[in-house]
Length: 232
Image (tube, rainbow, N blue to C red; front, side):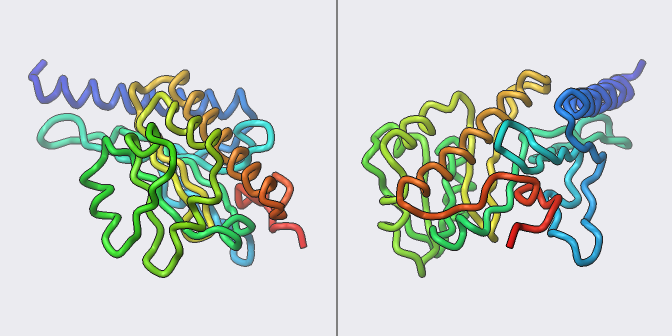
């Protein structure tokens, strides 16, 4: 078999195997699987991860509803036929309650410093009191927001937990959505499970930080995944 044909076959096999991993995870956790994430019907809640490959939607962890999909896809294979494989996972949840009481923010891993610097154009960096956190991440808010507001939001315990996440991650609140970007170290079910566990902890911890500040948030439910309208 020619080298380029072998590369195509291997990449296609990896892509198929990865799709099977995600579908199996969906079946075991009672999640909805879409090969390509679509839009919700007109008049319904806004869909999360529209257009994303291998999208999962539902309750990932107890009390954490959202959607996830492949991210940072790269082409693999030969010259004339290529296959896309993910380099990361993107997990999202609707959080209009949090977005209403905290500034939109981005926390970028230092490992992705070039992308982080690009995103920091016209933004203010937020320095926290955690040395370990500041060594791993660049946190920013838009120019029109006060960085002190974000700095006062997160407790030392939260910052220590984030600094200890054992993978390259980025997260933040943007356009009324919480996002969590996990760089894949391998294409495996165990890796996906670990990403979802940490995304769930992030969601719950941020909500807990808000509760400690006396800020009301919605009860966790399918509305955070765009599956139902938020309660009125």
